[in-house]
Image (cartoon, rainbow, N blue to C red; front, side, top):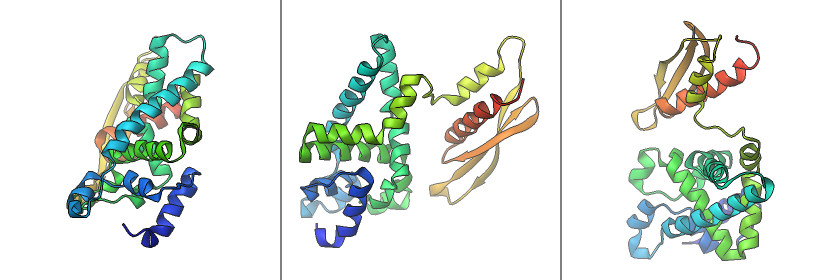
Length: 239
């Protein structure tokens, strides 16, 4: 890999992570998808799969420790459940999207053509790989600092009990509260974009009237997003 041609790209990633890699090859490996490594196997290029494995363990420990220290009254079950919300694919993918990490991925041609830069699983795996690369490059203290910085909002939300990802179930549960029963219907109102990068628009109808709508790369994602908006709006008016 010619680092000179990648100078701007890896500097951008480092600025976003607020960490400068001494060994740039670790950074390159962290953003290398298995499909790209396979297509360039004759060059000896490694994918980020091993880094992903290592990053997963480091992430579990750092977030688990943060919650353990912050919530001494929580038992093992609640700590485990809260940690899983912070380190789950959706959280990591959201943070990767916030940092525009997909823009810098090295993907194989097929993966590129099927929207690989926006796949939640790929983005989440890359975040784990970047954290592992920092650990190998600068040690545990450096990795911990970056992880806590990048995931601080989610850790705060988990500690306060406000980090919820199954918004649809929460909305349906709220709609059936005693003395305040409402009919909730999810309706796909639009599909747009090419087949390999489809976007779905879903509306939430409450008692027959549209309450909120949102979009996502799958019907499930759009339903969750629309439900999150509905829950937020609900707290300000509907009875």
